[in-house]
Image 1 (tube, protein in one colour):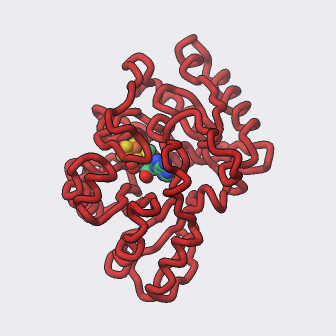
Image 2 (cartoon, rainbow, N blue to C red; image 1 turned 30 degrees about the horizontal axis):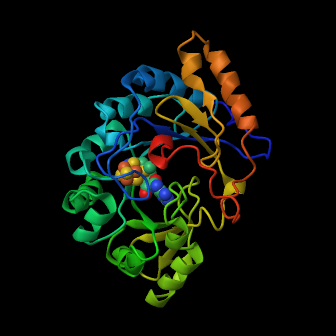
Length: 329
Ligand code: SAM
Ligand code: SF4
């Protein structure tokens, strides 16, 4: 098996986040405008054959972990077929998915059978009316049923991702954390990132304040994540079945440990979520490039991976070239 490539800062790059669509069945207020967005045209989006070819090349270079994301990955037709094909690539050690959970009650079992071993489900509130306010869709019950279905389907880890926003859902940090007391769910609190400019400063809720809210609930012990790829700090309450994660993506950037590459649904390779730099792999795929040419382009992009982002710097807010649904969070 190949050794994963290293970048100019000696980081081993062994994790690929694959966005398979920019479409979504929710309209989360921190990610998409209510009216939706101009979507990529069909021809702009990589076909499954193209995605598979790139996945094979990356895995042959030593990338051993792949996460399927979007937009909402489960809205793309035959997403399971793609998962099954990627799961079968020799050298892949871990295949996971990030989903909003809306379609999970239909697909959880088949996803597990297709080779996905861990799912992250985004859920920012336990209140159905608030879910409607945040996602602009009245689908809380479906997502909750999806979480239950995922727990029963056999996944080794079911994680809940919660974006914490001041004045919107920060009053639910404690209730969401309490879910870990009685179930093996892993609840991860994520700092709100500035993908949309409107009211960002007022809504930002830093990781340190999230931890302050958690401490009165019980003794929080720092624990191992049980997997290598997470940027979160992980904790567990004494006696709890599940774990807590806190991702200070803005205030405590974890760039020195970043092992990620991202491939957007339209075939652009990004080495940093917050950088405008992209390598156009679609162009290479569609102009007859050989696998070795594509490998060279990926190695060259890895070499230019930025040392860190500058999101925490007060002057540096308008750095994001694409919204999250288009990059693949
Ligand atoms: N649709 C799927 C979902 O929501 O899980 C996958 C794609 S979504 C872009 C991936 C993750 O990005 C979600 O957990 C979402 O909460 C997170 N996200 C989107 N916009 C964000 C923002 N402005 N700040 C922090 N996280 C964000
Ligand atoms: Fe859709 Fe995920 Fe963005 Fe919400 S965060 S709008 S579910 S892509």
